[in-house]
Picture 1: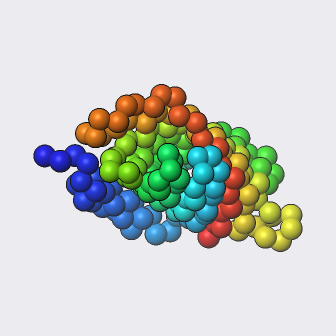
Picture 2: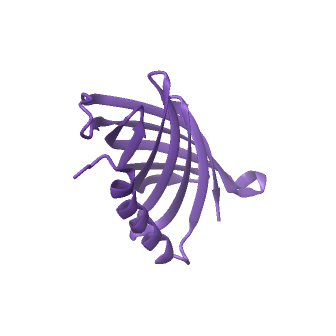
Length: 162
C-alpha cells in the first residue's frame, strides 16, 4: 500500500471537508489569503462553530517554496476564540496538514495562535487583517525524509467574513 499516493490521502480529507461545509450552510463563514514564513501563499475557507459551539473549522490549500522546489498541501485546523474586545479577536487552534513536493509527502502537525482586527469602525465589517504564528513538527511519509521538529511559521493575511 502506497501511503504517499495523493489520491489515498486527499480523498478522505476532501470528503470530510465537503460534509462539514454542507452541514453548516447557515454558519458564519470566511475566506482568506495569507503569506509569510515559510515563503508561500495559502488560501483558506473557515466555518464558525462547525466542530461544536465555539470551535471553528478552517480548510487551507497552500503552495510553498522549500529547498529550491515548490510544495503544495492541504490542511485543516480546529480553532477557538480566547479573547474578543471590540474589533480585536485572539484565537488558538491546531490541526494536521499534508504536503507534497520534490518526490515526497510530509505530515505536518501544528498548533497556532493568532489575532484578527476587523474594520468595523471604518464601515468595512466583513474585512479582517490577521497575524498568525504556528509551532509544530513535520514527518516524512514513506520517502525516507527525516522529521523536522520543531517547525515554525508566521503569516500575515486578510479575511472576508460573510
